[in-house]
Amino acid sequence: MAKKIYVGNFPWSTNEDDLQGLFSEYGEITSVSIIRDRLSGRSKGFGFVEMENAEEAIQALNGKDFNGRTLRVDLALERKNQD
Image (cartoon, rainbow, N blue to C red):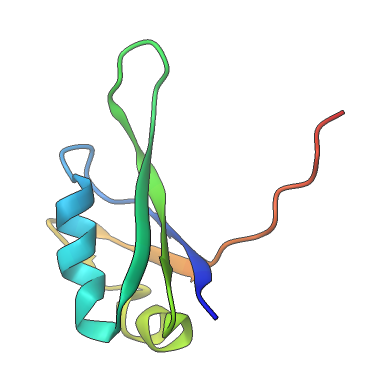
């Protein structure tokens, strides 16, 4: 079963293909999304990757330098409904 991974602290210039390439070494990726500012459309420097081998990818990539930034990689927390 695929798990959602939080990926943070990457450069604003990073795109979905960059994250796909980074994580694809650790297994098949279900989805990649970068969170963007609603007004400017610019990356907020974090996003999510959904994949099968989440634990292996987290172990390998958390704290790794990626284009001059130290990545923060962890299992994504479930978002609670904001009623």
